[in-house]
Length: 373
Image (tube, rainbow, N blue to C red):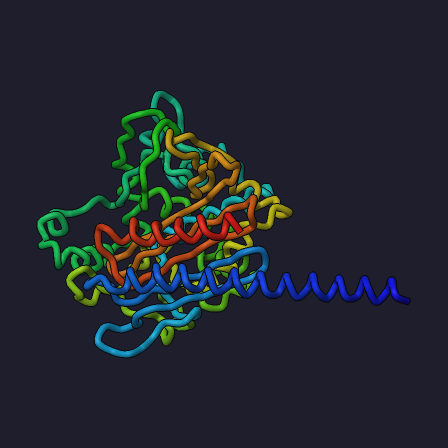
């Protein structure tokens, strides 16, 4: 009896210590993120900021500023931001599913899925593969059709509006016509380069393979299974009431990245609550599709590349996977660490040349904290 009581007391004391440690840890995380967020939001160009942290089964959400300049409208974990090129990670996940389902192979020549002939989509008899569309080594230009004089001659403040006007009139037919004019300057798979054009082509191929739209594919394979209810393409009405307004460094409201042609390259919108769910999915090593997405496919020197994800292994053995995204008025950074089961997402509704570095610095500071706990 006394032994049982003794064990109970020990167990109670252990639980109390654990709870107290958890409270202290939470206070420290709150203090750190509060300092980082307040410092960020003090910049004259800043508008709003949302941060999500996931650590060993627990979610933490922090919000600063406003969703609309000049109004007191604080963001929440459900506030929707444009996530730009992080859309490519969703599309590449569909590619991984297609491989697992044996609908395609990563080393397939992309011309197997295109109507007509494209002798230009090879170099020294080496064709572009599906993998290279995903890991940014295809050699396809960033924009297809390439920028017109109307865009290149536009003033800095009006460029985004001209891009939306010009590309808003383009269709998939225009894109595929422009694809005939691509000229590769090296063997595909030899060098990496950011390419919206490659992401769009991968999107069209997957739509053809599955005989349905990318909206349906993202919903079926990512959103519904993971209950990501705040993520959608802008053409959907589901996120319109929660969507923040985006701004440039001068404080001018920017147009949304709404061009239908570009949806597979950067058309998704999401929230910190949903992107934390996306991080949890990426941390699930029991899923074949995730393991395939995280396989090293290219060495860029300073990092490796998987299916969209950039990867780096720290000296302490922790591997980080990350991606960023930017549109005319938004910046996004998502990063996770498989060995310590954690991740961070940072969203802001202001975009300037320094936005990506500033929000990645926030995520790295949070990682340095949680990795030591």
